[in-house]
Image (cartoon, rainbow, N blue to C red; front, side, top):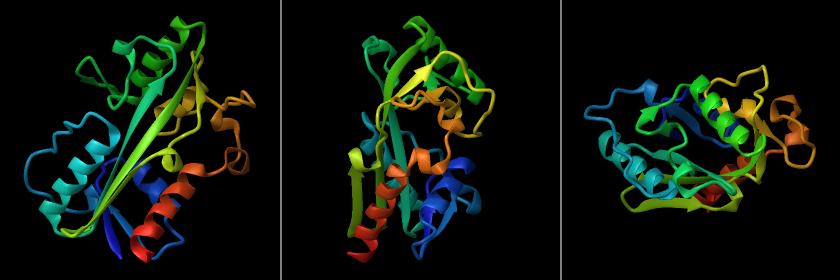
Length: 201
């Protein structure tokens, strides 16, 4: 089955392809097709609302199976007005580059003693057709709590800039220094389970 992933982020697209490679799914991105009309305005108040808005709008435009994901970043102990939530990359109305994100979130950690505890909440909406719409937001596809530090790792993971600031809570290792076994694949397992439930019953 060919399914459109509603993203232009090539890093996210490749990550999802790897996650779903054991299933009989060909994942294509927005860069592979031509869509008429304006960009979709993400007006939701949480990751699931935004994932739903995007998936339904893309389905209307392309009339093929499509899914969209959205994330929110929630940082423990900071002021409500600083809480990124669904606006992880958009700060004060400006879309940040990868390096600007590293500087901005490193600054939040610096203002709070060099580190803050954070968690990603992820959501997905899959539209197979008008009558088969599946969605989920919850622990199965969300991250465990981790640490954002003020000193970035020298390496960069294009498309995932906050990986350079992210440290595993127990080992205190940068995720970029951990191998696959150390990191585990909780979120990947969660997405695979979601698609198996939706497609295989």
